[in-house]
Length: 151
Image 1 (cartoon, rainbow, N blue to C red):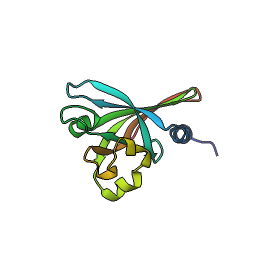
Image 2: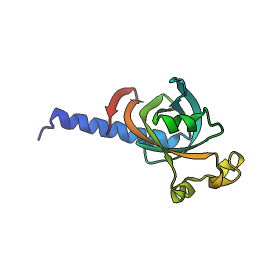
Image 3: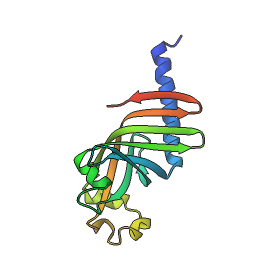
């Protein structure tokens, strides 16, 4: 039986998504953008806490200021983008963030290495755990380029 073009496309997307999950697993550092108080993108490097593949990524940030900074940006605008790069491959994600407030989830995500930034652990009033959910992914993996939208 011959495969339809749509089945071939679905298979190719599945293959590149699997490779994207592998890429995210290899990367502990990522570039995260927020929209600042003046409407401009602000990009910074952060450590990835956890992921469920490229579709759901978790990290921590600090609310050191009531006027600016990623945590404040995310409180007023949930739009974000994350980029990963390893070797010649890269992945650019566009999506939305939510600030995690569930204590059990925060405890699961907590990393003792962050104690230097947040001495009180998850009880530190400045800590913000962030969940990024992918709405669009642009893959450049093994010299193959593709953009896919998700809902």
